[in-house]
Length: 74
Image (tube, rainbow, N blue to C red; front, side):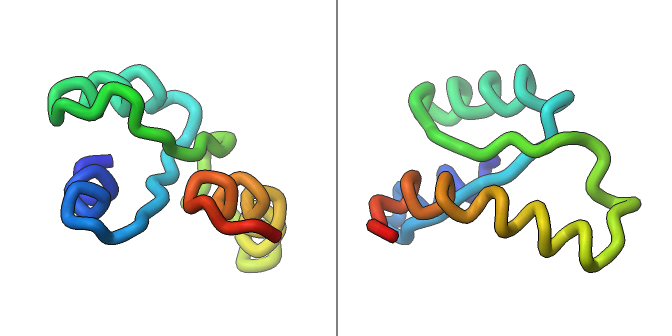
């Protein structure tokens, strides 16, 4: 979360991704960094045990939201 916020502040478009159990800490970090409206993606937990195929499926599912956050039209 912090990296995404710092990149955005530096003018570099970024999308942070965290798993659902970390939503509360992610929101707290955004507030702590003075960016309470920071948009990020939530994905189901866990991700470490996913196969490569499952990771690709997650990326495909998240792509429209990633593009939305970045302000890119499909």
